[in-house]
Image: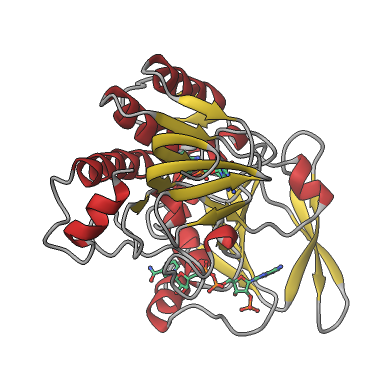
Length: 329
Ligand code: FAD
Ligand code: NAP
């Protein structure tokens, strides 16, 4: 037997997907270890640690603060016996059984692994942007659009996400200005047309945001025209950054199948290409990116892992009985 500690299920990530997987796995009496990670803003708990009010997670009629919701999920997972490693996983070895996950030199072995490492929004990298995050600067229109009813806001980006966010935000805002660094959008024609035809959306091309203005809330943005160098100010009360997301998948490269931007591919239900490794949440889903969908995914991954371990399913799929037996270390 290899050195290290042995578990039934190893879960990587402590966002809604990871904690939900832990609740289901530990409650099914599987010996469960969850790696909380430190990468999402330096805090375990994932992306919701970076926000204030969450108003669309079912069960909280009056809304709940993001960090409070994550603490509730954590307590629920601990209640059923989930063990924690409060660190980042630094490398994985899915090439043999048992599946092995490393934190530095420490090895942890599992019959099944659930990858729930999420994705991170790409930001502009301005100090003023960071200071006003959650105070008018956001990366999620579905999450925060509601707070900008009747206000003038701006969206940065020229891709499909920017067009989608801008179009969505017109349901709430009185005016949405799309700021793009070139004079041509990257977005698909249909998404462009939808935005161009929306009377509430205006465009500022060839401009980049140099600074987000405001002390405690967004009051405007200082822009620079990249062709003329001319500076201008656009007064807005909200700024949505829509220049892409990056899935947290570096450590799985070469072992798990990914699409071109690096999101992990679930081949059947939540199963990846490696028998016994399952995936849940924003790390595979670049479409919905919601706490509730991530939590739902975490539930599915835990049920799939459970059935994989007991050999109840997957025998008619690529994994085969041999691999199932091999996983029963
Ligand atoms: P994440 O929440 O991204 O969690 C990933 C976890 O993996 C983190 O704990 C991270 O530390 C960990 N991790 C990463 N790499 C490693 C590693 N190598 N080792 C160990 N751990 C690792 N959604 C809503 O439904 N409603 C909202 O109101 C809402 N508001 C939002 C506001 C903001 C500002 C943001 C950024 C997002 C918001 N979202 C909201 C989206 C929601 O937060 C995500 O959809 C959800 O958190 C995804 O959950 P997840 O578990 O897949 O991933
Ligand atoms: P994307 O296609 O990579 O577009 C990112 C946009 O942000 C680009 O316009 C880019 O400018 C701009 N940008 C990048 N870094 C910037 C910076 N530092 N400062 C200013 N602008 C910056 O990303 P996405 O829009 O998130 O889309 C990702 C994928 O999801 C795409 O394949 C897209 O088609 C898909 N998607 C589809 C839908 C849909 O069909 N409904 C919706 C959303 C996303 P440049 O153009 O100059 O590079």
